[in-house]
Each structure stands twice: as structure tokens, then as C-alpha cells.
Length: 170
Length: 170
DNA sequence: ACACGCCGTCCACGTCAGTTGACGTCTGGA
DNA sequence: TCCAGACGTCAACTGACGTGGACGGCGTGT
Image: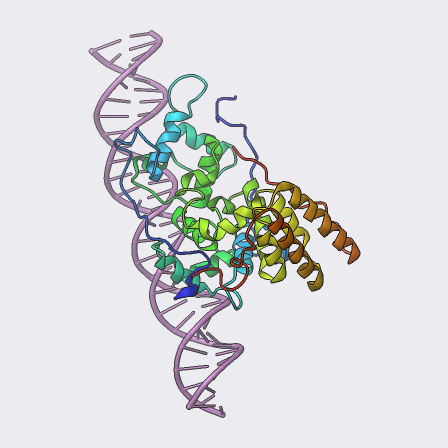
């Protein structure tokens, strides 16, 4: 044994379920759940979700491949789960995520953090604060973080230690 | 036609040539060139390149999807250039590259537009501050915003009238 | 020389990714 | 109330992806 593959083997997931049943804020695992999360998270400037036809047309207008709204629905519903490279590329381009988001690896996790953040930012004031902090020095940011924790405690919210770090990747 | 896409549009990049004739000089652009580079670069412990059948069998043995040696040849030759998600996943897994390797220009194309915002947040501290602000009351957020402005001024940064409000793109 | 095995090449075919089109629902306006 | 348009949903269909197998070249042992 040994010379079968250049990299260490990994078992693989066969999670081929249907849609996104209970993962309202959980981590999507199937492709359908990932697509669903994109639709629920990335919204037009005002209004609800993008319509399937809207996304399809926008992708075509960007010079992307032809795609139909019905197919987007199939993907989100989980009735189709094996799109081609061009369609993955187009979807990633439209929703503003790296194509690797659709694959089973760590990258999708970090993207999901960012999507969660995007959802928060859409809700008004949080966004303002976040954007203004860009460019500040490390010390100031740390100080601000402590201030926020102070305020959180005042309002009776947990200090929320988690939320992870961005791992460097090869 | 403003709200077609959450990210700014861009022109096309529909370079769909055939194989990898002379581009031994530079970086691979087409899928065929990328696959070719993988075969030329990733070798078995001893000997020359992997044979197509060997790769196909190894992928199947890893629990991956079924794939044929003929198809790998088609991909490398450029006669097929639109594989499905599972095949991309399997190829990336075998050769030890991230799946995003097969896509056009990971993070610098049109993704950048919307992702530029997220890229700011990705780099550590900014993100932490932003995430922690979720759940805070409106008054606290406003107070924090003022604190941030104070700090920005201290560091000589503009108070940044832009970026905060309104539709995210032209 | 001959046979055997492995490999790259390529073609004809089957399967499933993706499209087309129809139907029912809902909202807003005349 | 009725009509028009937009949208989600779904089934039948088309075509490209992907496979199986045939053919020839090349190295190796007998």
C-alpha cells in the first residue's frame, strides 16, 4: 500500500440529504444548505431575498454562463446536487463568495462566519461601527473590544468568547 | 439597472481555448492547463507521472465518486472542460490542492467588490469588534460609534463619511 | 521474433445535469 | 371583483458530461 495517492487519505462524507431543515443559523453541510444560506443572507439593497430569475438573469448579464431560475430552485431544494464548474463559478461570483465555499473543507466555515457577519451588518447600526473601525491601530481596536465587552456586560449579554480565528491556509 | 447584483459587475473573461500548447512558461489559465500542471508536478514516489487509470482507481478507492481514466485524459487534453462538483472535489483531494485551484482567479476578480468589505473584517481585530457589537442596544451602538470616531481622529484618520449608509454599489 | 502487459488515444453510446414550459398562488391596481 | 404581472413549484425533455471499449505503440521477459 502507500503509493495510491500523494496525499494522506481522508474518508469522505456522503451527506446527500435534501434541503435545510433545521439549520436556521447552524452550519450548512450539504450543498443545498449552502445555497440556501446564500439566498437567505445576501439580499438586495432593499427588500427580501433575490428571486431565482433575478439571480439567473444577473449571472447571464455578467457574462457568465446560461443558467435558469428553475435550476437555482432545484439546487436550493436539494433535488440537484452536482453542478458544473461554470455554474459554481457563476454562483460564487454573484453572491460574492470564493468558489471553494461550495466544497467540503475548512474554507466554507470561515466564509460562513463572514456571512453571519454580513447578516449582522445589514441590520443597521452594527455596520456603522464595524466599517469605521477599519484602519485603526491594533491597540485602539483592542481597547475598543474591551469597551464593547464592558457594555455587553452592562446590558446583560454574554461576553461571547468564541467565533474563531481565520486559519492561514497553504 | 442598478440592483442587478450584490457585487459590482465586470466584463467577460470567456477564454475557452483548447489545451495547453505553449504555456509552459507562465501560469495555467484554462482548466486543461491546470490539470496538466497537476499531472506534470505531482509524481508518485518513484518514476514518472501518474497514469490516468491509476489516478482514477485511487480516487475510487478513497471513497470518491466514480471516474474513468478516459475522462481524465479528456480533461487534460481540453476536450472536456466543465466537470461537476464531485469530480472537482475528487481531483483536488487526490492531488492535494484546494478545490478553488480549478477556478478563475481566486479572490481578485469581481468577487472583490463585495468581498472587499469582508476582507477588512477578516483581518483579525476589526472582525472581533464587529461581531461583539451584535445584540447591543441602539444607544450603546451609537455611543460606541462616537467613541470610534474619537479614536479615529486621534489617529489622524478621516471620520469617513462614506461607506456607512445607502446602497452598497453604483 | 513472439507474446504479454501497460499505457495513451479516441470514438460511440448512456446517463444525468440543466432547460423549457405549464400550472397555481399572491399581490397590487383599475 | 377581475385582470396583469411576478414568483415558486414541478414534470418532461434535450444535450453535454462522463463511460466503456477498441486500436496501436512501446517496453520486457522468454
